[in-house]
Image 1 (tube, rainbow, N blue to C red):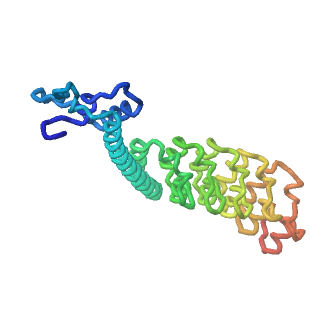
Image 2 (cartoon, rainbow, N blue to C red):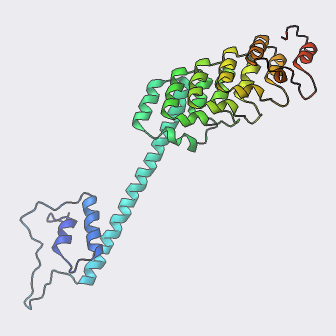
Image 3 (cartoon, one colour):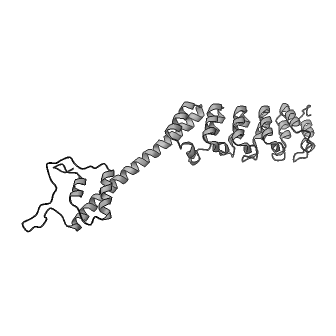
Length: 288
């Protein structure tokens, strides 16, 4: 606004250049978008005055007007770009803070924080794959045994059940190893094919459950994908793993679930040892 109360929009519309070109309308739009309005000053006028020769002295030439207005336009564009950059930087900082809060909530199992984050940042779970973290919030939540928190994550973003961490493990690998039966059940309802997924060491979830003696989880995994019982780990069948890690109850369950499959029951490891030979070597008396 100038000394007598006129805004840039007043000046623009008073000093019309005909025909109005695209730049004139661009500047008008920029001013309006920037919040510039016509003044309410009715006591002064921007009407041009005429000289004694009938020449409009107040009205600048078309070339001078365009040069003057191009300068204003350039300044406005720079200002608006600066504002846009500031907004983008602020938004980026906020998104980073939200992501850090999400991982902290996953570690602690804080459902209220998770709910608030999703409400304020609807795309936060979509951006998990773009982070530099070695695991997803679902991996972290499962590692700490947060059942309800994990269920919410899976319901909001089912693709998290397929994601792998830096070790190539899916959330089902972690839940199977840690013995979180209810979480395993929830994950199987979302991604049953994870039963057959191998991590970077070649292990499927069933292998990890057998190595830890997780009887309830072994049963759920095999019922979900029956063929998983036939998948070996470096030559060892699931039965061999149970014997190597001294989990006889898990081994008994596997024998029952094998339904008399002799090729499975009599399978040998890379050294040619059947489960009976391996049990004798490891001094285990109960095998079948």
